[in-house]
Length: 352
Image (cartoon, rainbow, N blue to C red):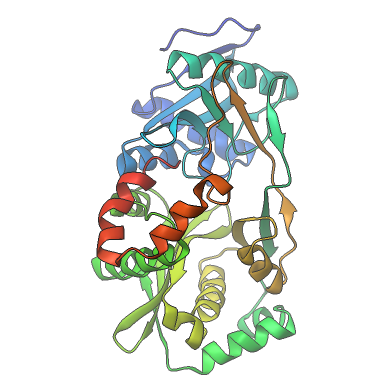
């Protein structure tokens, strides 16, 4: 698997991220090129530890110097089939290269590499070069905005209608906790399980959250009503930005404006940690989450996603909004929570 691809004067090879020297070199390249947290070897290895899906990557080099990097997760699902994703369980990824030529070299090399791994589909959550790719820029949008200089200014930066919802949450008798302790993790997982079940989505395995919390700069903010956790979010920190990544709320959260309170408190917390940007992540264009983030004053930016399917194979469909999955989603929403929590991780680890 480590033999170079002879596609240009540059060499492209598959790397073993379990080799510390390789991972350190690539981490340095990601930082130098301003890559996302999802380009980092640390992310790939956390995904592997938490889901069992293998971490891979293609490295372009010239004269011993890194010129490009493509982080990859090999996803296997009995329901959805096999694919290579850049990056697995991420909203960003794709080719990170010094120039367009290197980007095209990596974009071509990953097709051959996917076939070597018996993965008929490749998904790149980011830029791609070359021919043969199906590119969409209308499916998802990203939301990023600067953090304000102080608490009062942060509140005033929120549009009036949404600011009123935040104020209601601030007036309610709610408690905020921050951390990565066993209590924080248990509270977050309980809330997240209930939240995604209500949306008709299988929950990720608890081991995924553990691996990310243990391997990356991340923490949990939870909103409590008395002794009950009603909203919670696991956030990532990278290059001056906070990214609330896995969050949700119970039915009581909406009534008590706990989700509104949660995101506002996270903005304040992130600034205290030295962050200057709030990355609200991605949302399906036109969805309820998309409208919610716009209400906060965030300007949606289209995201570019590319896919390639090997000739003779059907395109992979794990899109929860596709008609094919609507009956399954409706059924999942009606499952008792203990059953959804038991079988959900077995399905979700293959979504990628």
